[in-house]
Image 1 (cartoon, one colour):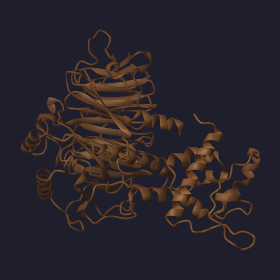
Image 2 (tube, rainbow, N blue to C red; image 1 turned 180 degrees about the vertical axis):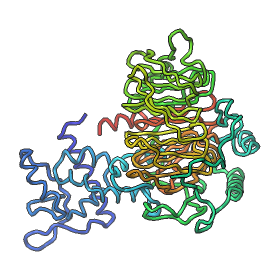
Image 3 (cartoon, rainbow, N blue to C red; image 1 turned 120 degrees about the vertical axis):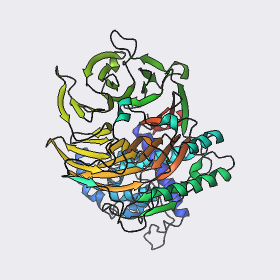
Length: 593
């Protein structure tokens, strides 16, 4: 860790360099005026923070916030406030957040200016994309910009070393109608005997929004047109591959939008659009910021669920169709990462059936499976079993909050449990007509998506269903961040909704290049990751439409992903796990900063 004096020195160097860069670009044309009326050379001398008491600094805060410079200010702080903001906008976001506030009050206030952060995000993303896609009120701009810079610097260097599919895999991929047969979503066998819910009318129509496709303004392309365009695009990629580059992402990305997004400042016309994959303005051939570690998991069945734990991504949990949950120490040597295989009392396996889902809260890990149980494990006690909850149905998805554990089941219900109680079942929500496939929740809402092609928002405080949205194809994965809900559907599309004060709005739906079911999605203010059974994992900028930074293709399907503290964990169909994490040099650099 650096001392305050060293941090001020680093900030001084950053500010001087940024100001010099602006001089070279002709941005800083002003110069200080001396007493005799002559102009001196541009001055960027840095002014140290005063040593006045905290109370005196509080009294001076109002003058520091003023857009005009103080008469007593000299050096850099004597420049107009707008020019200082321009200089600071060229500093890394982590420096503005962590270093400048320790230097002086004036520079601390720059980090509180949301307009400056919005200008920074526009410079990173470009002026044609809408960001954020959802509501701008209460949006965390500093965190979003920090994540954006890390995302761009990390994945733009990875884009040149992605894995290319062998031609025989591509041919087989085409034969199965763009959905790999071995990796189709395998729900319990009884599911095949039921109607998949498509087009089934609901008895209760109050509060149901039907997704409109006919009669919308603009040009709307049907699925057959999209398939034809994808085939033409893929044929061009196969006939003219980029030499020495296995990433298909260098080709144009196709996306779709709708014109009913009132929260967008700038909206693209309805229909199929083309744009080039995002090319960040970075120095050529930067050193790789991310490294990939492959875990030979030891599972003898496909990994259905993967979860990073601990807040810093130091531990990874994997749940498999071999009935086991394994814990991995990602900070250990590659040959000694396996920590434990969780086993229940009197059993040789974690569950007595497939493990479908994982969720965690504090030191407790919950696993749900086809043996109709949710099992709790204490990570601080070497994975000791802490309880078993019988659900009377296969558990497909879960969400674990501080006060409640929610389980989405095969029998169309969302079950709410208090694991601390002797009788853990608190409430049963019955809003769907088919199995629950994915869900998310916070202290206000429970959001569930079902195979009946609907998404339901339940108000926890009012204890009632707020709204039901009917889609054309069901969601298989979901991420809930801030006021935005992002979901990946059966056909490889992304759906985006916003929820604010109990009102849900359909914002947009995008095609980011996936050609089969999206099996995993993660969305945060400044990052977006998706994976699909089309053998690919993608890193995107979460704007509208999303800009794809990197596409990683594998020889096997991808069944899920988890993201925490800048680490990406991916569950592959060959029973292996890929861990993408910052290199040691980048980690040391972050600690120093």
